Amino acid sequence: MNPDFIIIGGGIIGLATALRLANEGARVTVVERNRISTESSWAGGGILSPLMPWQYSAAVTDLCNQGAALYPEWIASIQAASGLDAEYWDCGMLVLSPFDTGTAFDWCRQHQWPAKTVAASYYLPDQSDDEALWLPEVAQVRNPRLIKALRGAVLARGVKLQENMPITALSANRQHIEHIDTADGKLQAGNYIVCAGAWSQGLLSNYPPTKTIKPIRGQMLLFKTDPGLLNQIIYRQGTYLIPRKDGHILVGSTIEDVGFDKSTLPETGKMLMNIAFEILPALRSATLVQHWSGLRPGSPDNVPTIARHPDIDNLYINAGHFRYGVTMAPISAKLIYEIILGQAPDLDMSPYQWDSEI
Ligand SMILES: Cc1cc2nc3c(=O)[nH]c(=O)nc-3n(C[C@H](O)[C@H](O)[C@H](O)COP(=O)(O)OP(=O)(O)OC[C@H]3O[C@@H](n4cnc5c(N)ncnc54)[C@H](O)[C@@H]3O)c2cc1C
Image 1 (cartoon, rainbow, N blue to C red):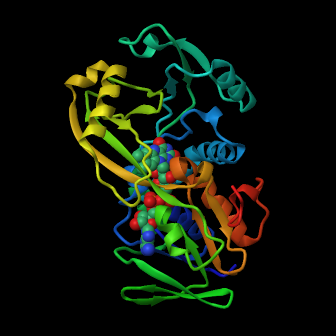
Image 2 (image 1 turned 120 degrees about the vertical axis):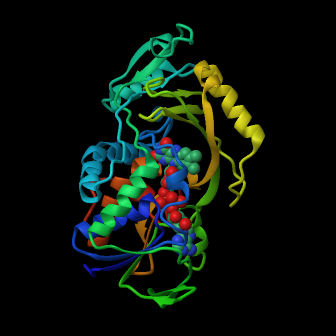
Image 3 (image 1 turned 90 degrees about the vertical axis):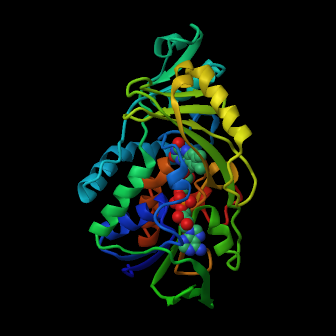
């Protein structure tokens, strides 16, 4: 293995990839346009599961299930290396109706997920006795803290971080990237891995086949309540509530195809707030702390690209994780590492190819 990598993008995918390579003895530099991490990986919710898992293709299920399974050990190693707590919490998720009980149970049985129906009022006293689906093994991580811990862990492993350094171009000679351009000059490495989230497609526009990765905005609200008010993730018809152990509760999110626009709209905030109040009326007396948005790296059917470029021997991509990049991070890092080594991953990689039709 050429031990020399530049990773473009310091979100969760770039940092997870850097950590994996550095753990195996590689020399790694992460180049980040801003600070680490101000984009989707900071803005997201940190649920370690698809929201209605039975609605996704095998390509998404495989990455999410394998990613979630790696989490406890992955988090423990990041926390040990960084000394920081990422607040992993196996708090479970309650899905409120409507949902198709038969389809949900078939899927859970097939994937060996524990699941049972309960009255919604069992966990949410203000709700009716309508049937809800309890998924006890769904976990969460406090993603902004995970990013901080990951930053600490990669530094502890000797990764070089170059923040506030936008990459403006990748320069190739025949089928080989020779260097990348930054405002401060050229940077060179043996291999280049694009982990630039929603910005990946723009960076790779000169290197066909072009990927379809585009920004999809999600707006979020953050409330502060007393710790213990809510102890499970709640999902209802596109909206979720995520409790943190210190009493913060996140409410999300929207799916908006509006380009690279991170504005927040008061009417959208109000809409999310009203749904949240219906689900958990006690939130009405809570403090609204923040309203923000993030740009997910949207890809067709939520399927990321984790691959070597078909023609350029030292160019890789690990991007396009759309709604589930936090969940998929550890497995995506493992897979790209195996691809770099020329090992055959223990997973059908055809959906994640650079030139895949998906
Ligand atoms: C509202 C919301 C809720 C979400 N909830 C969840 C959830 O509950 N569970 C889950 O699993 N996922 C969730 N996600 C999705 C998840 O956050 C993303 O899939 C994941 O963060 C993508 O990580 P990334 O590293 O690819 O992208 P990013 O975090 O966006 O990182 C890409 C980085 O590349 C940098 N970059 C871009 N261009 C350049 C350049 N030219 N030069 C140098 N650096 C560059 C950017 O500055 C950025 O830091 C959510 C996302 C949002 C927005």
